[in-house]
Image (cartoon, rainbow, N blue to C red; front, side, top):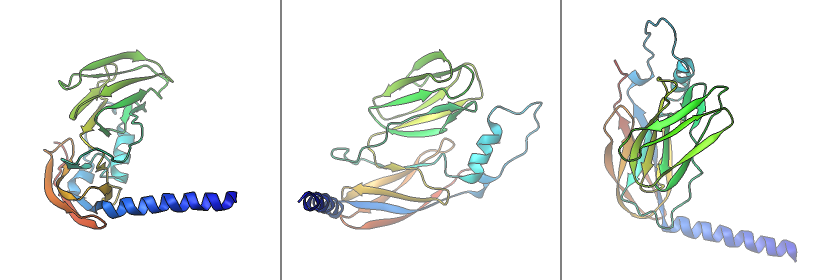
Length: 226
């Protein structure tokens, strides 16, 4: 009897998932960027910046690591939940460098380095300073409204990162091949926006139909900084 009950519950959950999928659609496709983004320029330094080698290796492995794709003007009511956001301080870097979060989220900033760090922002939308704290400690900040927040460390001038606070949870960071899927989207016409710290957000209109996948190709023109 217990096995029959478990089977009934599983079928009920599956039916609910199928019904939800039939009522929503998804946006999927492949993003492409300028090859210049993946080109590493050699620069002469007296010493190398902390974390520079790791940052370059990460970018070479995934040139889309700092790209975010999101849909505008989609109601967040009844939408999927997102994982608790974390931006770590590790190898004298903010990891990830770009963190997309849902408005109203509290971001944790744990220190994984064997040295003191600090997290602060002078962004008008959310100004804060968490002070210095040691390895193993973590502090947090609430981000209530859509905005772009740049964060720094008072102790290490080369450390910086971005918190991209979005209106709804329909956002994604492409994989290393540029592939992406935004699932569970209510039917409608929306603007799909591509964000990167070195470009103005650019977008295109997409039509989402219940029970189907809207195929989209996204071109992101990014050049290496001079």
